[in-house]
Amino acid sequence: MRIFPFKRKEIFSESEKNRLVQAIRVAERLTSGEIRLFVESHCQYVDPMDRAREAFLSLGMEKTKQRNGVLLYVAIKDRQFAILGDQGIHDKVGNDFWVKEANLLLTHFKDAHIIEGIEECIREIGESLRTHFPHEAGDGNELPDDIVFGK
Image (cartoon, rainbow, N blue to C red; front, side, top):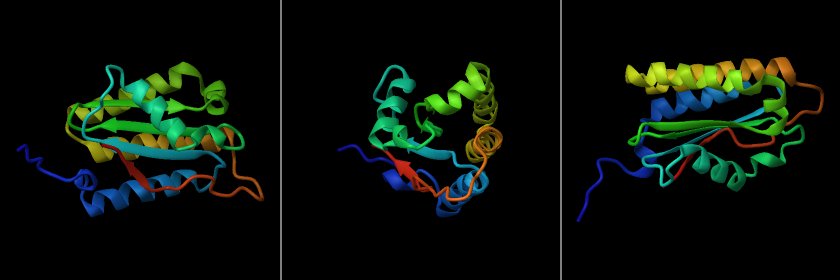
């Protein structure tokens, strides 16, 4: 029998989860854009971007009105991640933005600052979303702000 040191939803402490959800809420406050965080222990795919695409679609993130959803996928134990922006935001920021955000995460993750790295990445994505998709009257929160925990 194999015993894991934590259950799926215990990857982060309650205070860490609260910090990350709060980061998402603050990042989305002045934009119509949507940010989701998908976390799991292991990535079952060779390329974590494949898992991010699967999660993106399973969460219905491609259905936002302006196609401005961003998924931050992290496989903690495998030390892998992917950042996937929908077509609307990708068209505005281009590949260089995503590379910059990936490098930001790498820097934090190498120093074992997982929560801080995710928070900073969410903040910067939120700033970009605010620039390109400012909040307008009638904009509602199209997707939940909670963390999604995978397998």
